[in-house]
Image 1 (cartoon, rainbow, N blue to C red):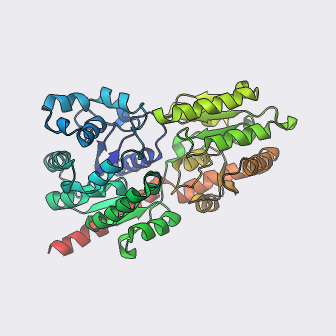
Image 2: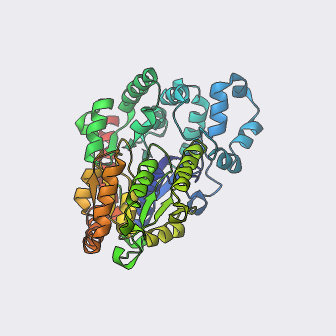
Image 3: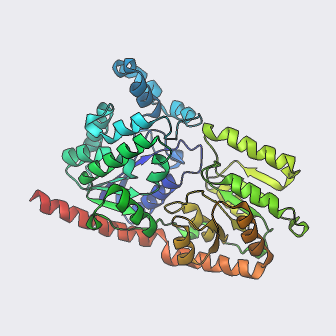
Length: 436
């Protein structure tokens, strides 16, 4: 099967769960002898230097479309200006600045993107559609998330194949917008969603959430979990390592790094946890620098700088080194998440998880058996959960073994890809019936 995956890039500046999810699926599809083309939007993809060639352009370059949206003068700029702004070095640089990967302040652009061929980016849409028609000839097109459904009508109309759309954490983007913009965005997503053949929520929790806000009919939704290759991670029992706590995700307020820092500082008030360190990785955007600086200042005031280690490398070997240093991982996301691929990466490495009882976290922890949950947004509740975990090394090892087995049984990417291929087959059959 020939598949096109359209994926918004992060520029590689932070740990991007959606980028990783899509990359794992693409890897598994290719291993099963399917032809998959990854097409990046806005910014280069996470780890793009490993699996993309310069032959595939970055469509809707973040700098160019921002300038065109805000300043009409740029809409008539010469082609060489676009080429310069959309070059990979420029886009990599842009990913490090504030505002490049957030919704606040980009409400008008988000609405325009969802309007598709009726929006300000219609020329970019035509470029993408024609490039796909000329270079790919796919059997199916897969959009990474519902914020891209503005592409669906023109893609379906011009390419003539079903458009599939994953559902994961769109609410995190929309919820930070002005209330008036939130309403408009959800309404546009629902309206443009009629051109999508199937929606793929990554968890039962998120399926229910999106049915409500996007008014999606049951027959258009088919759940497929996120998956990883367990064998790509080095498994080791917590009892073989120091009693260290880990955080692996973008270092920001929304994902609760400050909650974990506060919980760690509370834990360190107990002399019996003098040996425990906090290891943090995941990178950041320009928006996060002030927040991260504030956490470092807090740690310094408590005299704990020597007990908190920031890891700069969060890809491949760097991530493996990080998991080798920690016995438990917590990413205390304030509003919960649709899934969280870092949970699978942690458990595949033999690292149990401690997550807030929000979003899909209880669903994943229960299904995998690889951790526990705590009362959300409470540093003291998290500190108590970590205290219990780290005080019982035998139980910690049991969580590690069950978590690894849970990932192999329920979240192996090969099994998830088989389900995704069945969704593709049904969507293609539906499309053929409609066309006839």
